[in-house]
Amino acid sequence: MPTAPPEIPPPRRGDRLYWLRRIHALDPETDHQEIYRISAGHEFPWDYNRALELALFRTFCVPSISALLDATGEFAWRPQKRYEDTGLLMAEIAKNGYDSPRGKESLRSINRMHGRYAIPNDDMLYVLSTFVYEPVDWIDTFGWRRLSHHERRAAYHYYREVGLRMGIREIPGDYTAFRRFKTDYEHAHFRYADTNARVGRSTLNLVRSWFPRPARPLADAAVRSLLNARTREAFGFAAPPGWVVRAVETGLRARAAVETQMPPRRTSRLATEVRSQLYPGWPHGYDISDLGAEAPEGIGREWLRDTAER
Image 1: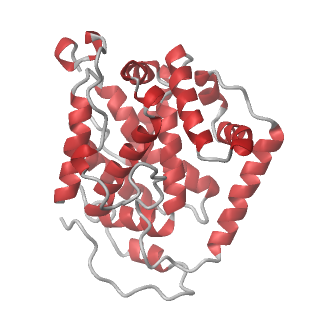
Image 2: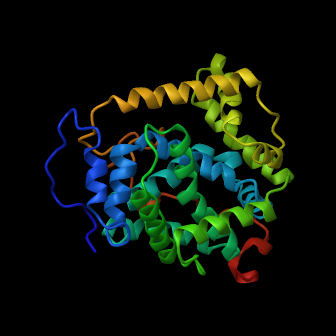
Image 3: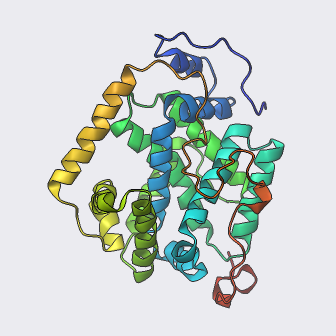
C-alpha cells in the first residue's frame, strides 16, 4: 500500500470540488490513507484539528481514563507538551503513512507510552472511536460541506489500521458498528468524577492560555458552548450563557460560508494547525523519539501494566 499520494495535476483556482472528485475516484478501503490525507489536509484542516481537540476532551468524561491521566500528572504540570506531542505524533502518522519510517517511529512512541499502563482495551477502543466520529459530527455541523460516504468509510479504515498497530483488539468490523460501540460506551461510562473535573479544568485552562488575558473568560465560555450537556455534567462545568452559544455557532457557520467560496488548497495543511509553542522549528525542530510523556515517578502500582491486566 502506498504511503504517499501519487503526483496529480494541481487544482484550478475556481474548482472548489476538485479534491472531492479526486476522493470519489479512489477506493475508501484500499486508498483510505490518501483519502484521509486529502480530507484532513486539503479540505478540512482547521475543522479536523478543532474536532480532534474536542475528541480528546470528550475522552476525559470517562472516570477510568481521567483517573489515569490525573495520576500521571501530565495535564496538571505539562498540558501544553501533552497537547503538542499528541497532535504531532498523530500528524506524523497521517502525513507520512502508518507504515512509513516516520509513521512507524511515531507509533512506537505512542505504544511505548501506553504500554507502561494497565489500560482496559475498551478504553483504548473508545478513544480510537472518537478520532473517527468527532470530526464527522463537527464537519457535518460546522464544515463548508458534509463529509462524503467515501470520506466517512476511509476515516474508519484509516483508524482501524492505526488501532491494529497500537495493539487494540476487537475493533468493530464496519463504520456503523464502530459508531454503535462509541454511543453505547458513552451511555455506560460517562459520569461525573473528581478526576474528570481536574483533568478537564487543566485542559480548559490550557485553551484559555492561548488567548490574551482579557479574552480568557470568553474563550472558556466558548469552549463550554461546544460541549453537550452530558459532557459538561461529566466535568461539572456550568452551562455557558445562551448568547455565547448562539455567537459561537453563528461564527462557525459564517466561517463555513466563507470557506465555501475559497479556492481549493494546493498545499496540504495537515499538521500545521497544531499550536506549537514548544517546537517552533516544526517539522525539523524535534525528534519523534522525544515526543510523548516520560514515565512518571511515584505513580501507584495499580496503574502499571505489570501489576494489573490490560
